[in-house]
Image (tube, rainbow, N blue to C red; front, side, top):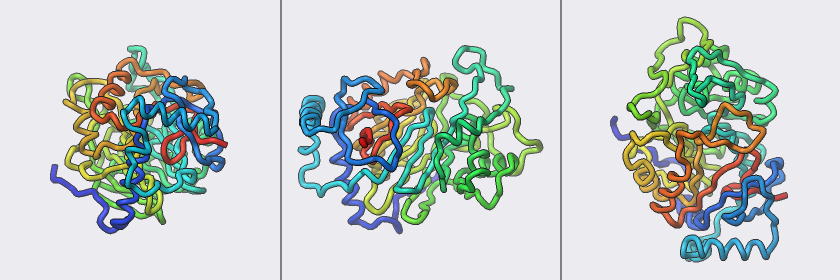
Length: 378
């Protein structure tokens, strides 16, 4: 693959880049794994980190005493407090106007003020037999409008990493009912048009583009799909024209090349690197330097030194959030159940070994996080 420079050259200026570096330093700290009750994104205010020992679903008290205890925990866990790691940097911009919600799998909802961006929104989560050893590629595609509509808000932008069912199958409903613009590959374009989405709503990208959506910057990053132990994956292939028939089963949705995205809210960030699969082009991600990295957890070892190569290419982000490690055939009503093929504990250990100052956030479905990936408080 020819190297494509995905760094912003005509977007945020150099001073904005320095502000992002300041934010990255502030974001570094102790591991964070707690969750807070689901609250509206508009209610997000200054947030605090939970102690590393807190269980998912535990509410975090917003008190000065708790803040002090959290700082002490950060010092113990990393050898330097967040304040020490940020020495000499200007304060990070307030994170309260940005909110992140994990949809499970690779999916995210990002609210920037009253604007909403979705990434790989897979919400219907129907059974295919994938997690019980009876996988059926003839499984019919389905969308539950009530479930989808309860989570998506009023999106103006939908980013799609690739076209497998656990990333794309709810996108036609979202696009047709909200009018949101969809950004994805040529394959995604042809599939969505076949499924009834207006072609004028879809922006086809290849990787390397830097797109300005009125203050929300989207950098499109050429990427790769993850591989199983046989170095292959489900439903490969690309489309260069509309399929002969409307897709009906999960096997009718080929991968169609894979993208990653870096989304930056405003000139000062935060910036979030979003992955839909656990492989990457090292040259393509070098120099991105996101504040937050939503990293897909691998289910095989076919990609060598995946974690250290990725984190170093990204400039050791201040916060790493593991994604695509849950059983995505279970509903979003409970806590995430790990995919037994994804060794989440080993992944987290590798992150901490490669970048001890990076704060690791194990996300929960029921939590709204602020722009520093801390549970938002009322």
